[in-house]
Amino acid sequence: MTLDEHEMISRVIIGQQIEDVIDTLSNRGYDYRTECADGKSFMLTQDIRPDRINLTISGGIVTGVSFG
Image 1: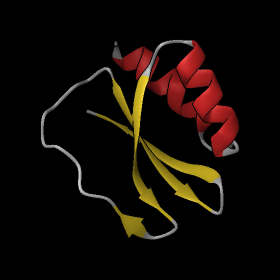
Image 2 (image 1 turned 120 degrees about the horizontal axis):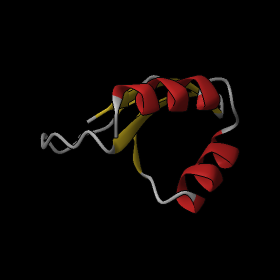
Image 3 (image 1 turned 180 degrees about the vertical axis):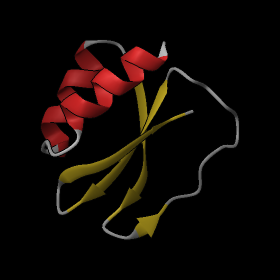
């Protein structure tokens, strides 16, 4: 995944309902995981995968995206 793809994905999914984001990412074959939800951080593996999308969620809305 290129930096342009990272930027485009971030712009599209930030502010969207998590259910819609999961449907979109799954249908397009993207690997994702929840990094933080409603202030609770989750333990994650430390492997770096630029094609994996890490989601931050608050109140059912995606508020942040990182890659790795």
